[in-house]
Length: 344
Image (cartoon, rainbow, N blue to C red; front, side, top):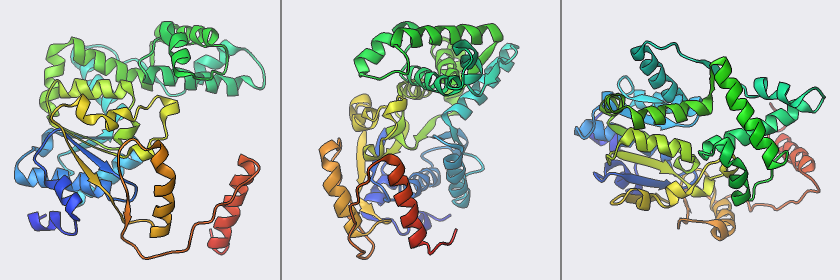
């Protein structure tokens, strides 16, 4: 794609985000402001300018669906064949498999569901499957926050976190779970991030090979990064500055799973010399919707953004209250049914 085509249709802030030569670069992209468009255009623009090499570029996102969309857009821009795009866990698994093969080691089995191990520990009963899932969620939160079984109780106390069982009991189950995995030669998805970061931090030759392979790093949805993922990002970079992230702290809703939006909010503190670009034109919602959102968000907002609508006026939002979550769900379903005229 030509240089002019890559910049076509971009507003001034988007143009700045795509063409800025500064790294590290943080792009604060409000809802509906075209973040994926800007991220993929930036990758393609830098490739076209010779600033990055596509076969040494890594684009990281959180879901396979998002990775697929990123890949599709990059392919349409003519660079997908070279750029590696994937999830944190998928990329970590691929790099670890290469390491195990190079070392002549058999790869451990991948445990896809923690409840397979946890449920028998909790004993029989109709509610044990549900409780096993709750304990699994606690272990996932702890591992996302780089918390070991020994540190779990103190961490939950510091976080003011409610636990499905008393914290010492959950910590004991966490420890038994880790031991059972070792006994069975299994690892879970959380272990992928820990193990790859460990390998990058302790094996200089392996780390050098990965940093040579992936020299240019792009991370989507940066507001959802947790400490384990941030540690891996640091390991991939190895002190380099070639990083571009995109995110919106107003869309940070995964704190309960261990995510920490401060990595985005304080991006320039974590990466001194970084530049920030704010995308503040919304292409999705009416002015009335944005006015309501802007009125609600400032109390908890951590970065200054005031989204401006680019679409025509629409009806005023209605505020409706319900007696319970179930009632709210049914109310939303009825409203959608009426809006769609009963069509699926």
